[in-house]
Image 1: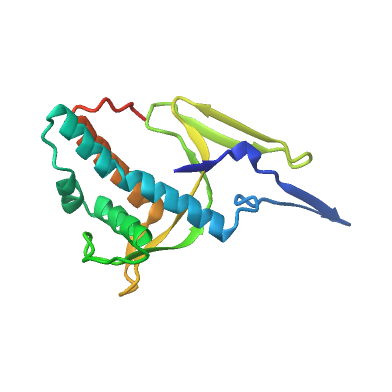
Image 2: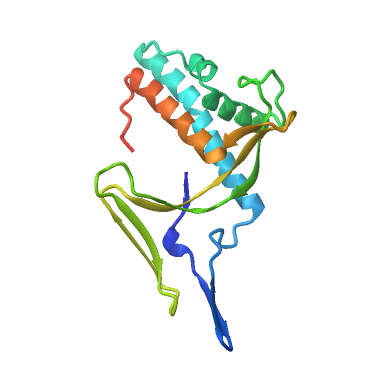
Length: 188
């Protein structure tokens, strides 16, 4: 879900008599429409894995039911419903997730992860005098700009979860299905 280079963020330094300040905007001028476009591309890329899996199975004779992946996993179903709503300008059939998902409050935060390895670390540092940004990671740590937001059922207002988390879980579900079908999937 990485959406940009964290080194590209330029802090805005300023001062007035007796006061120094630093402002950091991780969206770096990305508009709401730009964030929505990025989110839509991500949804499209995840949802179309169904068709790639079906094509692989048809070519190789693998017996993995791509439709069942959606029916058996709420996150994959939410992504599929978001995709269909975009493709058809609305959901024109009953939603596979049982919800009418919509993404709202998109934003682009900085994330730091120490990873899962012992001794993992991640640092995003800025010299407050110059605005120079430095990133340091060790043993699987990562620093990145990501896209996130809230997914809600537009009919009920019910929260369905954070957009990023839904995407990550749906990707994990599709990765497992692809591996079950014998697709050589690189590890992340």
